[in-house]
Length: 169
Image 1 (tube, helix red, strand yellow):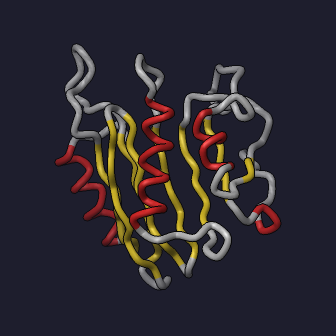
Image 2 (cartoon, rainbow, N blue to C red):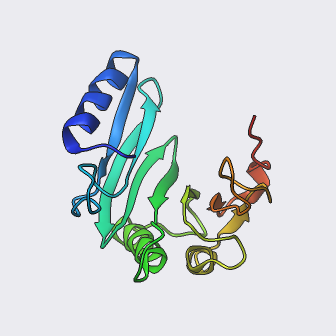
Image 3 (cartoon, rainbow, N blue to C red):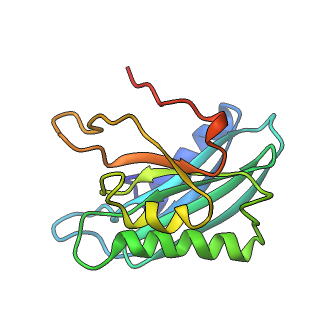
């Protein structure tokens, strides 16, 4: 999300009027030089008719992650920016911390993470860490930017038999 806190709150109010519960947040880190917009943010919209439990929103350095459990499946949304440092490791560490804090046993609890990793599948810190929790990659094998040539937006989960290859139109 490229929103400040006020814009995010307005977005959540509009989502609520349309029957959705909005959960997530924007980065608390300073905006990029010359920009009034914070660096990143993530959120989930859940249909209020579904049985869901909001999880947590957390960030480490410039990476953000939020989780929500819908119908017994925990979904994580992540953003790891293309900047110096180890934002991908930071995002992976936040997700693992969420697993531990919520007592998620990967062998007994279904989970799926999706987001903008700014990493290519099979060469990804996030993928490597989440594979240790039973994750298997779910990707298209195609670029995920309009004018790009790399796939940097993808998912990973521990129940691939229920996931099909994503299709974008």
